[in-house]
View 1 (cartoon, helix red, strand yellow):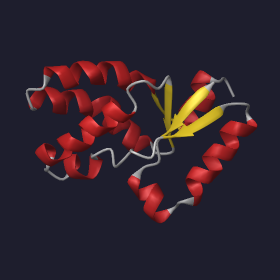
View 2 (view 1 turned 135 degrees about the vertical axis):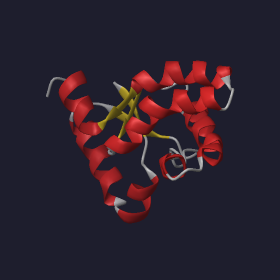
View 3 (view 1 turned 60 degrees about the vertical axis):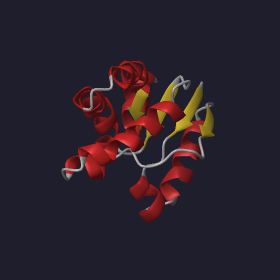
View 4 (view 1 turned 120 degrees about the vertical axis):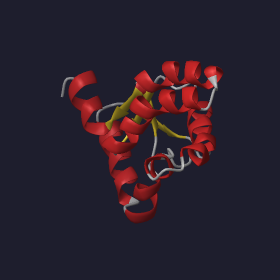
Amino acid sequence: MRISLFITCYNDLLFPETGIAVVKLLERLGHTVTFRPQQTCCGQMHYNTGYQRESMPLIRKFVDVFADDEVIVAPSASCVAMVRDHYEKAARAAGDASLADKVTHVAPRVYELTELLVNKFGI
């Protein structure tokens, strides 16, 4: 399976070895891992601290960057929760029905690493 890796901003800044370990693990399991260099923060920090409007460009960027990926994996449950639980609400609150529709297509393909391993791969 071709899996797109979303490395969260805090992983990138504080624990860069996490991304390397995720790639090694998924490749050892026989999967192809891609990395989109255009990816940025999911917007969770902005959204959760009252800066919902400021999170919108990050939400749009995530949806655009990962729009065509079959599976997106992140080693962060909170970032996955942001995408799944808050992106559509944020888009609707901003009055962006087009973005909300795009979110409904991308969000179900976003997995936290252990969830991907257990629930999708049965490991």
